[in-house]
Amino acid sequence: MTTAHPHAPAPRSLTRPPVELELIIPAFNERRRLPGTVAATLRFLADRPWSSAVVVVDNNSVDGTLDALDAFTADGPAGPAGRVGFQVIGCGDRGKGAAVRRGIETSAARFIGFADADNATPVETLDRVMRLLRAGHGAVIASRHAPGAHLAVEQGTLRRGGGALFRSLARLTLPEIADTQCGFKFFPGTLARSIVRDCHVDGFAFDVELLAQVVKAGRDVVEVPVEWTDRAGSTFSARRDGLRSMADLLRISLAR
Ligand SMILES: Nc1nc2c(ncn2[C@@H]2O[C@H](COP(=O)(O)OP(=O)(O)O)[C@@H](O)[C@H]2O)c(=O)[nH]1
Ligand SMILES: [Mg+2]
Image (cartoon, rainbow, N blue to C red; front, side, top):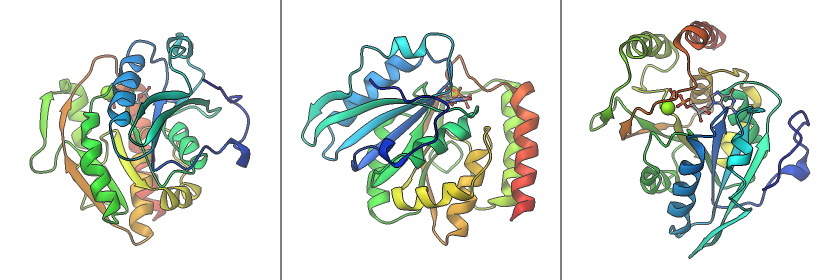
């Protein structure tokens, strides 16, 4: 495991080997939820026919997240396409959006995307995602609201109410997309690296900004219905993050 200095910019030398698929996991105080997700993800990826790597982007977690990842080495499990890479990098700017952008900027992968530390979207979804990416779509995103999706365990009432309000605001910018907020989104690498230069939202509304840039670039977004399980221990606080996310959404819709 190697850790970049969290306040350093991303020099070209920090970019990683050009694997076929790189999966970024933004992490903030994820000691409990992350190791199991990393283990399951590495196991799944090792069995796939494409080369891949898992990259955790940590924002100075203070709960021992990095220690909990010590068991994972840079050379992960081996499979038909070689060993799955594993790396932890830091990000000096707070927020899930900032962390995901840092992961994208420093990636040289052909396809790139992100998933949450809690494995709420089954990693098996990647088989369908890769087929769709190879077919040329601009973004392939998991969706809890597209036809065929299923919530195995639902979120609580406040979160669902806030989520409904968030969705109606997100529709101002992305009227065609049923679920902009599922934490499982994948892109062609070149497109992702180019659009993040125009993205600035550091918090939880960053997905909407990213997808808006995909559409602005003239590319399409496809939603993959998923079986999604709400997991305890969310880092999203309706009180702390909710209002800020909605303000970011309004800014995104006005900026277009
Ligand atoms: N690096 C980083 N990751 C974050 C930050 N805030 C949230 N995350 C990560 O973003 C993901 C959000 O998933 P989760 O907390 O389950 O939120 P929910 O599923 O939307 O309720 C998790 O992997 C978090 O650790 C942050 O400030 N920095
Ligand atoms: Mg979650």
